[in-house]
Image (cartoon, rainbow, N blue to C red; front, side):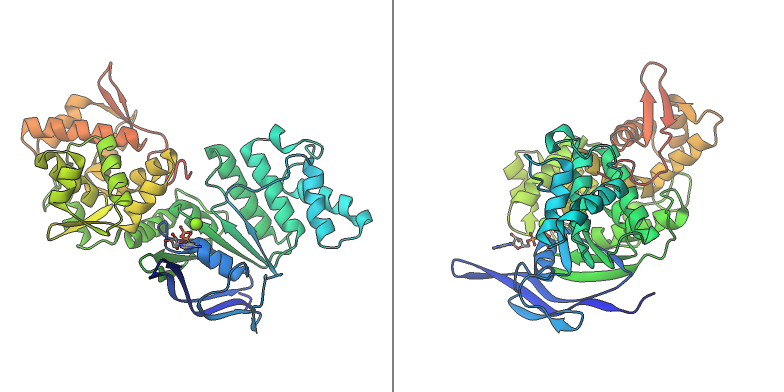
Length: 438
Ligand code: ADP
Ligand code: MG
C-alpha cells in the first residue's frame, strides 16, 4: 500500500452550544487516511459522521484538535477534497453536460477543454447518450451519477461521500456501488482516497478497504477494522458474511457469549432460545419510540405506560429486541444499541436487510435453513418442520415457534411460505447478505 499520508485528525473535538448547555458531538477523534485507502465511516445517527466530513472538507473548524492535510494544518476550505451528499444538488435548468461543465469552468479549466472533459467524465460513469437530458428526465440513480461525474470533474484527491446511495432505489444503488468500485479499482480516476459515510454494514464491507466504526454520546471511534477481501467482492463468500457478522456484533454491543445470547439449534446440546411471538410492526414501533425519547436508558415500567402495552406483551417485545441485538436490558433499563438505532434510521428495505442479517445468525434459523437445503426442492411441509421442532418444544409451542419463524423469515425475505400448500421454502437469496442493501 501507498504510504502517502493525506489526512490526519489529531484529538479532534467538536462541541456545540445550545442555550447554556455544551454538547460534545465528537470527542477525541484520531484518524489518518493514506493515499490508496477507501475508508467507510459507520455508526448510528448522531454519532458525528457528517460533522467529521464537514471538518475534513474544511467547511467547519473543530472546537479543538488538529486537522492536517498533507502534513499542513488546514485553513479554510480543503481544496483537495469534495463531498457528495445523499442527494446531489444538480441545477435543474442545466443539461447533464452543462451540470458537469460548470464544475470544470469553476475550476478555471479553459473553455475549449471543458466540453471534451465533461463528455469523457459522463462516459466513465455510464451516462453516454444522456448529455443533453435535464435532471428531471433522469432516474435518481442517473442523477447521482451526474453528481459523481461532477465531483470527479473537480479531481479531488480525497472524495468524501455522505450516504451517497441511501436515497436511491435498490437496483440503482447496487449498480452505482459497482460503478464506483470499478472506477476506484481500475485507477482510471485521479482520486487518491475515498471516505464514505454509510449506515449500511453490507455496503461498507462490499466497498471499503477499512471500516471505522463509531458510537455516540459522545461521538467517538470504537473500532477500526481492515477489510482485506479482494475485489470484486462476493456477498455470498464466507469471509464476506463473517466480516459482516463481526461488524454487526460490534454495533449490536453483544454482551453475552454467543451461545447464551442466541441459544443453540434444536437438537443440539444447550438451550434453544425460543423466538418471542411478536409482530414486526410492534417491534419497529417500540424501537422508534425508544429512539425519539431523548434519554439513553428507558425504564421498563415507564415504557409500558408510554406505549399502553400490557406487561406480558412488552416483555415479549423486549425479549425480541434483545435477541435481535437491537437493545440491551440491564436492571430494568432498556438501551438501544447502535444496531437498533441503525435499524430505526434505515429505509424499509434497509430494515429488512438488517433484520435478515441478524436472523440468519440465530441458531434456529440456521437449523431450518439446513433442513430445507437438505431437501431436493428446498421446501418442506409446515407439519414436517413442526414435527422436527417437537424434538425441542411441546407441540403447541412448536407450532407457535414455527409461525414466528415463518413470519420473521418472510419479513427478512429469507423464507417463503405458500399458504395454500402449507409449504415452507428457502428464498433463493436466503443465504445472501444484504439483498437490498438500501
Ligand atoms: P451523523 O451524521 O452521524 O448523524 P451529525 O454529525 O449530523 O451526526 O451530528 C452529530 C451530533 O451533533 C448530533 O447530535 C447533532 O444533533 C449535533 N449537531 C450537528 N450539527 C449541529 C449544529 N450545527 N449545532 C448543534 N448541534 C449539531
Ligand atoms: Mg449525517
